[in-house]
Image (cartoon, rainbow over all chains, first blue to last red):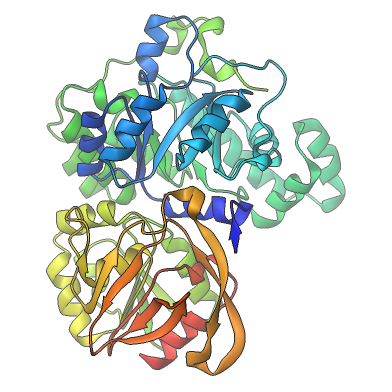
Length: 293
Length: 190
């Protein structure tokens, strides 16, 4: 019997496609997420917009809090560890969380290395800004890739940039001759094996999700139309005036992402979405997407 | 079943994997997101995914009764979450099953993702000695089997693939492998 293999890890990512993964900070929010159709929840101490506001070192969530959420919902529970902090990841695996997010939203613990994710039985998701970064994470064993976007801003522009970069670069790979792939791998700083594989497949070798700044049903559908296979929503739900309504609407928007009639219906009368942050108001040093190597 | 069109419930989950497998067998497919998509389908696959999410989406778009009606005339195959949805009973009130086959589904019966596994199951029901590489992801178990339900595949004595006249339900994911035998069985024997 085979457990914790790459195929088993990617298998769960496949099951989460066409769904919405919601950030929650307590059991009550987790229940709202599940009741409104989330495919999974991300258990957090604080949602990204609050992490941004509070400053300081952001670490793995207290296991007590994760446990409380695991006891409340039947859908998969994910949790974040710091980039390179393999001991936080060991603790999360010990807690049997369903997916570990090695996340730039938390303060990095290693300035050069990400976690060697092959040594874990739990699957990992990692953020990326471009294809080279995505393939480096896959090389380290990530079973799911998401765009980094810019978490906690409620501004989808960075997620769009990252998704377009990934999809555009894949398109570029598919028309290259095999002779050119090694030089491209060198240029992208990505493992040759995965560059070649991606060129053959014409898509990422693992599911490709969107995250970082998705705040409305229209944002979620935009990411899906750009090529995302599922959407993470962080602050967008529990920072809006009516979280349950917003959650419900975003779930519908992801399923019916190409149907303007449904999108119109679900976008109507939702109350106030979260307050967004214009990127120019955000200094280089405050951009979470710059974390990770 | 050569010229038939098979619908795939495409609200959430790995429906694209089923679509790819059917296409590799030369079968025409329709992605079903709304009631009207069921027109013209001669059979349906309910894929893996989250059964709570699928319950909500089926309810929101009024698909519950149309799917039950569809099942009276056409075959349905359910894999994993699909098995939970076609069951008569589920051990979790968060899921509203379609009640199409006399089994009780136990959700996440093997544990969390860390307990997900791949194993060989035997294909004796096809009189085929070649085992099947079965992928179980946060899989359900089948607890009660009624009189008019045939057990096709077992794992350690537990049923993991069952059928009645119109419904084929399995706890694992043939769509995540390259092995087309179970999809072909559904196409040929239903």
